[in-house]
Length: 531
Image 1 (tube, rainbow, N blue to C red):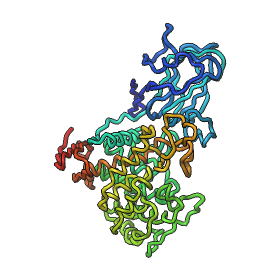
Image 2: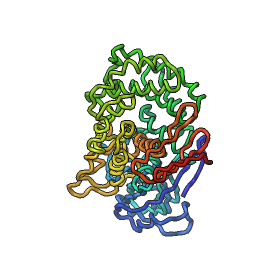
Image 3: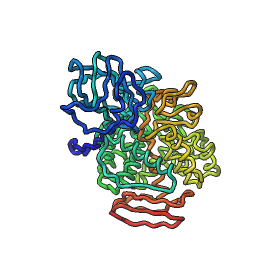
Image 4: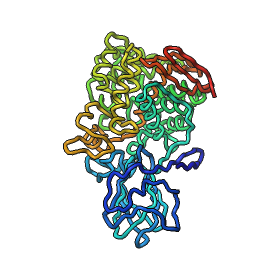
């Protein structure tokens, strides 16, 4: 069921999602009625309803996929006219049945555990979070009969333009989940990093999100809106998101957006701000390539590339390589002396030792050409991948002649799907699979809770986000390499697919002059502009 309405200039789509199963209940008669489709209104006549039988009765519902929104409760009768319920939302079944504080469960950024009033003969939408599961408990005495409880899913009403399909069913499922992940994060005219926790615009995290958005939806208003929001909230003499490298990421985002869409006017609007950022970065880099941003580490993440590299021995190597990569991207848009100097001075960092795959990946993206790099990136398969850095690791591996990009993609992202994911997570490590169960089941005795027992840094336990936009970048990689569409400055592009062992690949990519359809069959490539 769908409702479509407009919020100012943004067209927003709201889906009403019926639960697919009752995972648990106590003293709720005819709970199976909540799974039966009915028209979403309050009837005057008595019909089939679920009945909450007094204080403490509850039901736990599974809506089948990750949603961004709340629950819509259509109440037939509430004894005493007024009743109070506790609603607990969760991205996993464990989280939906957990109180604040248990395994780091929180209400950060969007309350997912709260009390609300429901009224006799009422139709109320309650809550705003990222969730798949909901637990509704009656807190007051008496009976309450409920006709329906829907999940309300709020989505941007972007027409989908791009698609990708191969003969590999798992790869197709990964592509769809990545696209759905970023679509859920396109909210309120911006691009959030997460829909449960981290409803913020992070400049670095935006890069894979922007790429995926543009390949799926073409030039859409949320991308320039997010870039403007960051620019307007960050004076040019301050670091974006209080992270030096995130100011560089903003420049990279600007270049990628304008390169892919051909929107030269937006580049002109922002070029002075971008140039000021690069001049400031250059001022911190000495002639020998050493750099120190002279910031208080307690207030600023000085050398940040990714959470797994944060505070590690190669963190500065990764930061230097990322700064160099950004300068190169801006030089593709225009000549800039500060960018040229940054590239020249940071060159020695490309030969430094790396511990992490994402650090080596950025060295490669910035121009490193050394024997053994593909072996480094492919060692252990998907071990050492991260959801944020997957795009860059896979891209770098392809650049140095790697052969296991599809294998690592299926191993890593397929593992999350195997545990019940419908969107991709803030982080994931292959080691979490050992002894753990699914997110749509309660852990068996002696079994690890893959949500509550894992996570690190700021995303420990149930605080961990299971729909994080930065994890969508794998789809951008598949578009760029399986379809082989390389966008160039000035609205131009090249097509050079890499089959990577697949016999059949087809897809459509929005390009500045229309929709580009690419079909690859047994090595033969066909392309055409279509509407």
